[in-house]
Length: 321
Image (tube, rainbow, N blue to C red):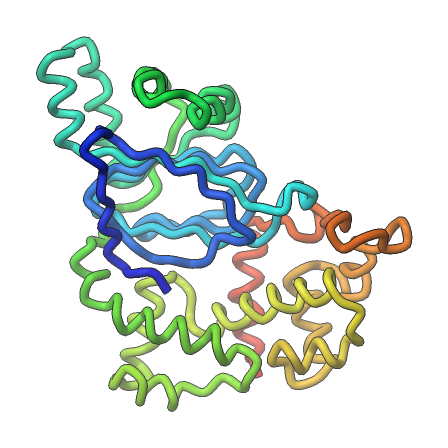
């Protein structure tokens, strides 16, 4: 797990940072930093956590996050599996840099208004984000001086639109996250290492020196899920990988992913994916399974929605065994 406080260092020859993030998955990394963050996500679907907001995200997801506002992404599926990577273009910049710009370029004053609203996090409409896609994609190939002017153009466009909604109520601060971060880091690491075993809190109480109720409270505060809900989600995602990438029998996959038996696995899978595991696997095997790299993921099978988030909670109520 990465550190919870992300210490972003802007080089002396740069006034802001641009990062082209392309990864096989976006793992849950609940963190904060003193800089603003503007993230444009494409070819990825999953859950986005900003402050106390938990929402499904998809193609053309554009979010502006204020300083010290905790956030994380948790990918669920690729939109185009042939591209192999979840993709996000991330821009970081400081309030000091903005103040410096405004001190000698008052024409940019409207930027400060949208940044003030970003203290709670802002989500821009997919239609507006799509209209800016070329601006973000072209940033990567420009020399630094042209990147700067193009980025200012992006900020100006953000300040001129009303196509956004606040994300967080603002109740969560980085002080709470700083207090819990080491314990949560240990808890999440343990869960990812032992998701295939029966869920017991006793090892966690020894690991972080807290009671069951304290662990549950910290976990809920940090992830907006109970531990059972998180494990249900994690096990199903691991099973999806095995269904799409291997020919293992369903009973083997069930046991490898922590389910007590194939029947229990199938019930949970139907609840969360609205189809049996065999139908999900069939999505990946048209054209007689050409090459693994040519397998096409079903957008319908993997699509994450708010309904599915509720289904995760319902699954936990039935008992994650």
